[in-house]
Image (cartoon, rainbow, N blue to C red; front, side):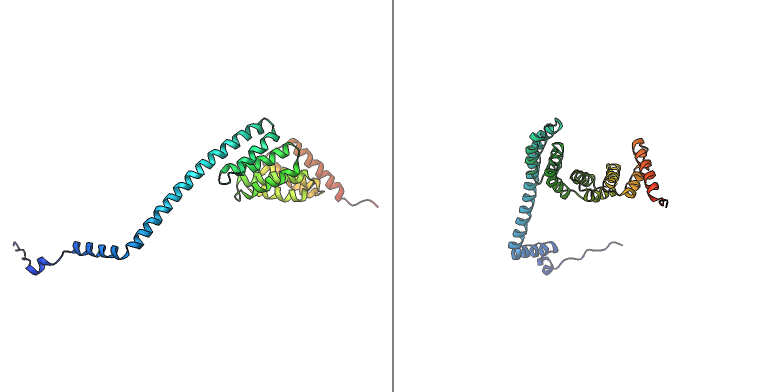
Length: 229
């Protein structure tokens, strides 16, 4: 059965609809708080502009550091360590670039190449400070510092570096075990050296390491036997 539509009264026709009411309310709220709205909008614009400027700065920073590091690396690979060091130091000046940390590492290695071990310690420490825990870079930094300390006859300190490097499951883990064993020998810790050599050989045979382990085990066995009266 068809229904007849209800006619709106004049009073109802004169009343604003819901859209008009909502629009009026919104405009009223905007007018009341427009200073805050403009402040928030301006703040967002400033933030976006700052982020864009920072990204542009980092890109240019990285490009300049890459140029300095590239020229230094070419000298380093040609074993011109003395000439390479100033360019590695220039790369370090771009502190927001990823090349800055590498500049510290290669400066340390350059001094090691020149047999100026004492000068290698400071850049090696800076490189360690720039690395994240449990990463290959941290492992490389620890191995570099261990090398510096071992060359300075500070094998007890070097042992701690090598032990920490060994705990990181990355490319230099085996090298850290071997370095730890040799350093343990140097400080007279035969048992520690034997344990490290055994750990090293678990991941593969090495005739020279096996021979050195056999020598240490034989020597340790003799030393442990009671002396005849």
